[in-house]
Image (cartoon, helix red, strand yellow):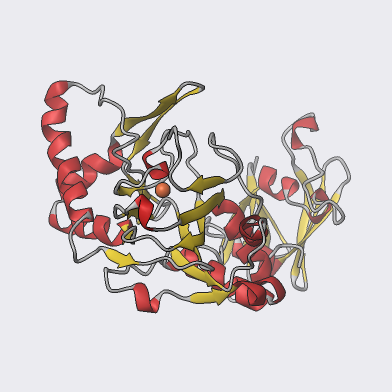
Length: 375
Ligand SMILES: [Fe+2]
C-alpha cells in the first residue's frame, strides 16, 4: 500500500502518522487505534467493552483527518473514531503511563524511630487526606506507626481494611503473636526472632503487615526493624557481584507442620521495573535446605552470608518498644523485622497481626490522588 497523505495525516500500511500542533509527528498502529477508540470503554463499568478478537480482519481506515484538537478516523467497516490529540500525544513515545503510586523510595537507617510518621487511628478513619499521607509513607519509607488504636477486638482488621481487603495467609485471616503452648512458628515463643520478612514460603508473600500491640508489659521483647532497601543499596555499591547473585537466584523456602507443607522459591533481593531495589524475601526460619549445585553455593553462600551480616549491622538496625495501643504498619517485602527475646513470666506480650497487599494500597493511593482515567 502506498502512503496516502491527507489533512495532516499520513496513512501507511500498518498505521498512520499524525502531525501535532507543536510541529512534532508520531506514528500510531491501526490495531492500537481501533482498540482504543473512546467507544471501546463502557462509561458505566469503566472496562473495555470492545472485542478486537471478533474483528474479521486487521483494522484498516478508509479516511483519517485532523479536525481541531482531534484525529477523526472512519474505518473500513463504517465505524467512526475520534481521538483527542492530547490523548494521542501521551502515548506517542511508548513510555509507561504515569503512575502516582510509583514513588521513589527514601531509605532509612537505625536512627529512624523518632522520625517514623505517626497517624492517629480515629483520625485515619475520618480523614482521607491523612490516609493518603499514610499510604505515601508506606510507599516511600515502608513503615508507619498508627497510634490511639481502639481497644476493640476488631480494631486491627478495621484499620487494615482502610488499605484494602485483609488478606489471609496459611496461618489464617489474622494471627496472635504471643507464647503458644504448641507453637508452629518461632514468633509464637518467647525466644528472639531473627530478622526476617514474613512467609516467603508462600508463592506471593503478603505485601503489607500490621502488628497491633494489645499488651506489652514484659521485660525485653523490643522490636527490631531494618530497611532492607538501605542495606541492599549499600550491598549493590560495595559488592556488586554478591548483589547480582541475590537478585538472580531463586532459593527455596518452606513451612511445614502437621497440617501444611508450604514451599516457594524466592529471590532474596527484589528489583522493580526501574531496576531499583523494591524489597527482599529473607527468613532463616523458613529457608529450606538450599537444593542448588554445591559449586554454585561456593559463590552464593558467601553473598547470602554477607547480606545477612550487613542486615544485622548496628548502622541499619532500629530498636524500639512497641507500646500497647500502637499498630506498626510496614511493607513486608521491604522492612525486615524481628524481636529480642523476652521473659514470658515477666508480664503480658500480645500482638495481633494481619496483612493486606501492596497492590491494593497503591490502588487506594491512586484513588485518593484522583488520577484515574475516568475521573
Ligand atoms: Fe514476622
